[in-house]
Length: 173
Image 1 (cartoon, rainbow, N blue to C red):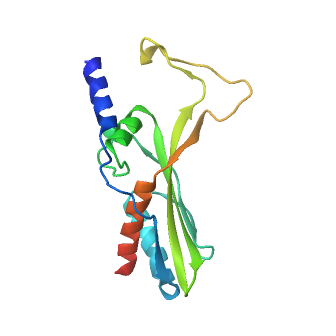
Image 2 (image 1 turned 90 degrees about the vertical axis):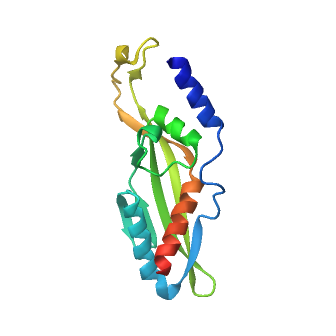
Image 3 (image 1 turned 120 degrees about the horizontal axis):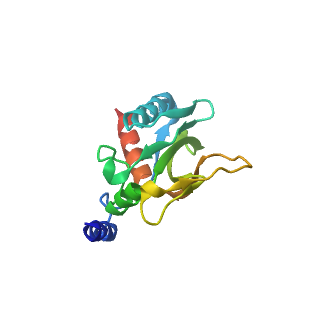
């Protein structure tokens, strides 16, 4: 059983990406279409299940809170861009944050830049047992510190490009 799961995990990691090439994670809008594009970006992020954190039209920034995902265990979310990501996020607690900025560009345009960061969530004080997860123990840090924290793994350029294309299409309607 374990050997079979390990073989499936290795095979999935060796497969190529599902989404093809990422492409650019940005698009341009005319200054007069800024409000419509800002609303389109907000709508696409909400539709994709992100919870908005900062919505600042004056500064031209939209950020989201961390959106957890479990890879293969959550087939309904479409964040993963490859089978390797599906397996990686099944084995590790992972979350994504999105940030969209509207930067002034030449010729009365605004450049819309989409960034997505993948973070791994860690639980301080967890000592996994080598035999069984059920035998794991937790220790307490007398100096305090956050019991749960996240560290940056990578930028998810493929998801950022997919979101960017969807936002540009929604803004063009």
